[in-house]
Image (cartoon, rainbow, N blue to C red; front, side, top):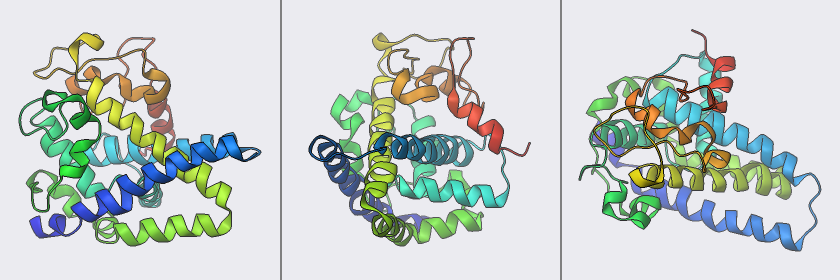
Length: 261
């Protein structure tokens, strides 16, 4: 099991994820100022829903890391593909770090992206410090038995490169604004989530937890339901992160359309 995880972690996070998505994401923003691109915003909205809400928030986070709901196999494969487009690594890698370390050791030394290690470490530098064989997969045995997750894990780089190349060949603007820009913004959303939502003075708490997780209203416009982070840490398997009537969770609405139970 360790060998499966060891073979891909460094490559996927840097050269098929963090580095190209950030460089190209900044270029896509720059391109908006120098080139008139009609309907780019429509591309972006569709891409953001597919990549961020379905692929990462509903998929990598709530479906694979927390097993909060079930879907049909064809829906799962689409979710896995959207997650792959985000450039945030394979589902097994993502779930291992999130389930086995961030939640199990939240805000302790073994938490890979706690702001206790420094804000910028929590925001992005931790991704550059991942080492092969560093993380144990014993807490994600269920995913190691999932043939679809294993396929997307072993072929992460190939699927990532082929998918992005296909969008580029179809239309460069489609690629830049329906894939690259949403993936770049999704990275920033989760960078913010892993950092500021674990700084107590920046938010409020509905639930008592052993970590420093808080809910933050002012980042809701970009993180959407993920900003109710204390609610999530206090009740990790709940698919609805909102506890109060005004804590709106759009990802939950999408999940209601996808789930089978």
